[in-house]
Figure 1 (cartoon, helix red, strand yellow):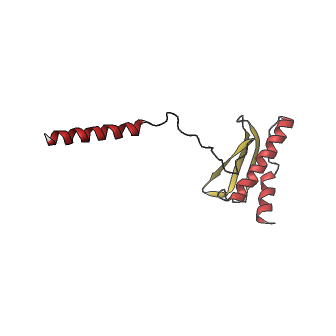
Figure 2 (cartoon, one colour):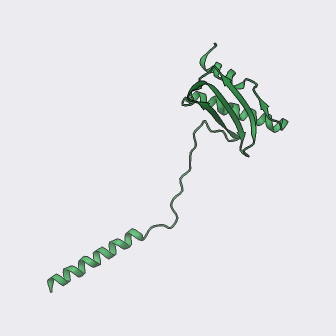
Figure 3 (cartoon, one colour):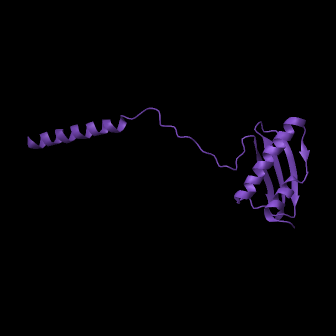
Length: 125
């Protein structure tokens, strides 16, 4: 008889503790999502390069509507896209090229914008 009472007591304790596990809010708390500072709010950039030719890059700048606004081919400069300074400079170029595109509504190519920004970063060549 004592065994039955202990079994019933253990069952009641387990059932009441399992109710606490399921008594949570239906909607999870939302936390503000922070984005890196090198992401632009007006557009984004994409680089295309080849591992066998590290000094040759093609950089495309797009606005938030996925419209190509600027394209530049860079030869002779190895871009280190892991550096924050490089990303910040590309962010400034995205903002600049998107603003220019909004005024003119035409695609521009190879105006050496990236080369001049990278030279500022590394010093004169």
